[in-house]
Length: 199
Figure 1 (cartoon, rainbow, N blue to C red):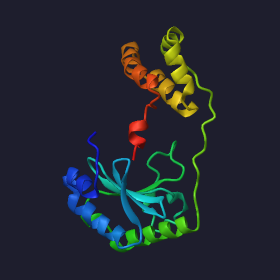
Figure 2 (cartoon, rainbow, N blue to C red; figure 1 turned 60 degrees about the horizontal axis):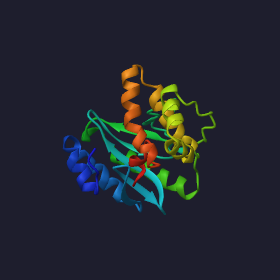
Figure 3 (cartoon, helix red, strand yellow; figure 1 turned 30 degrees about the vertical axis):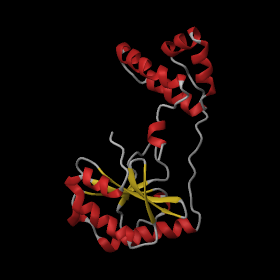
Figure 4 (cartoon, rainbow, N blue to C red; figure 1 turned 120 degrees about the vertical axis):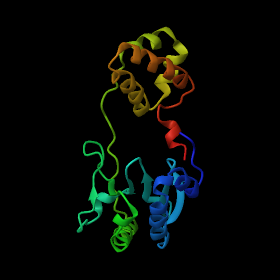
């Protein structure tokens, strides 16, 4: 994925929705939120805290409200994109520029800003599950002391990410391919998802 360094660059790279994204951006920028790029997407903050972001996909574009769980949603415009995983974030989704109700968007954005000011925040729950190392990774760790030390130096969540990455592959060949890819990353002390957290 090409690294996005500006909101203009993000809009340009999603030209199929560029007009609509510009319209959404103008609505959001009429508030006091500070515009930046995080996770390769336009993100809007208040005093350094993430309030919302905009994103474009193949068939739709949306506003992500980072603490959307606290929005009243009286117009029933929000939903949880990942019911099993997402606790706080809510999404307002559109298929075209004509689907954007400017007054409603502004109302929700202003409420999100007010909630941020009030400190309303649902903190992510820490995963306390034990790390179950798959056999393929276990073998490699036992045969390489440096790799084992690097793996043990990682945070539990990073260890868990690697283990699940191997375990979730259905075919043995895929497990081996994934293992070959992650061994150098573990050696360097890099987490599986670190490249997405660099912003």
